[in-house]
Length: 513
Image (cartoon, rainbow, N blue to C red; front, side, top):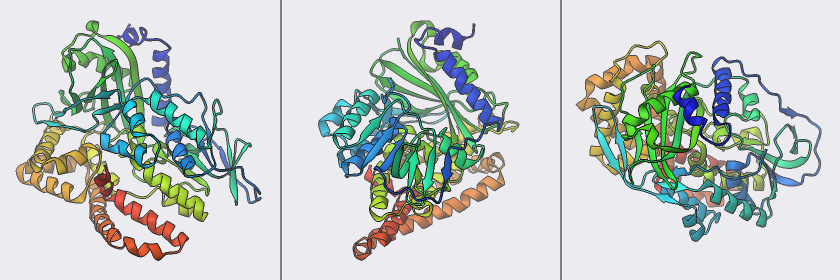
């Protein structure tokens, strides 16, 4: 029996079966053998009357935007394939990002505090044989998903929203004047919050393979020495199995959560989740200075996160993907709760304005999924942190490069370091870091070119240039803000969406955290 089989068999439920099912889905994706579902159809026949302004499919994160829209007076139906309930494992986030729950009146200040069972400081960034950096107030808040979702669920329903549990999405038919979901829910707009495996998104992408994957495994366990610090990004090994392993660790209410994650391409011969879990358990004693026999495992965590180079443009009117469905997360981040929260205010105000002005065409809704050079620029970093399946590089090269980069960011100070650790890339900070790293470690920087490939580097230069342009356009839009008050409502919708695109596309949203 393997370490993975031994540990997972001790946990309640068929955790090992769930891991192997995730591996089967991953294998189909890697082999480009995933069947393309046909769940969205179009017709030119008018729908006539509708019962809802918005139908949201996928409740775990859909409840966030659903509750926000209901509070703004929209008629919202939320369908969830199971009972809407948060998971046991806490969601880690930075405190300033949680302010949006107060700004949108989703939670009271007291409820927000009650939703936070765990806080810690500081957190570490460290690389094998190199730099160790400590920061405070980054991903140091653990949010209780069970309490948060139950509170939002009750607020949603008292605000007029209707929740339909045990109601999986099956189909949608788009009419010129509305969309009907499951041949039951007639709505002006369908919001897809079903995640990266959404059947709507699979149909929209037409079987397109992801450009890259992030695999993550982990556990929450008791038996560690008392430790009130965390790890944000840590490696203590060179490249192994054509992977650079990275670790995270956070204090949790009922133990300590540790993750192992790695970036890779979609080659079929890559590590499976079960093999990565075996690596996690093999390396855990060295990482945390504890024997597995000393630990009491509370739960296991695993998943894979596909990333695409280009934002998804759905071909249909009246359908809007959000969160992981939209593919708007960074290739460095895991998306999910953090990515949804970051875009929650932008999406809430944008959808509300689209409903008010009836801007629900595919073209109008595409502006709610904007190209963001701040995210596109991170593709170079993702590529530099991974190794091609047959690529030969110095096993210590990734650690050496990251150590050099973070050393320079630490010297430049928190205004440069902290945004990057929260997955926000800004033109001035990135430029300073690149210049300082090249001047102090030119040999390491030059090695990046053959590692990532010339085509990737040239593509990144375009996004880097656009990052500078978007920074200027965001600055200009702030100056012109008083002028937009005189615009007609439809023109104002488009101006606000362009302005949002420049703001988020330049990393200007970080100033709101």
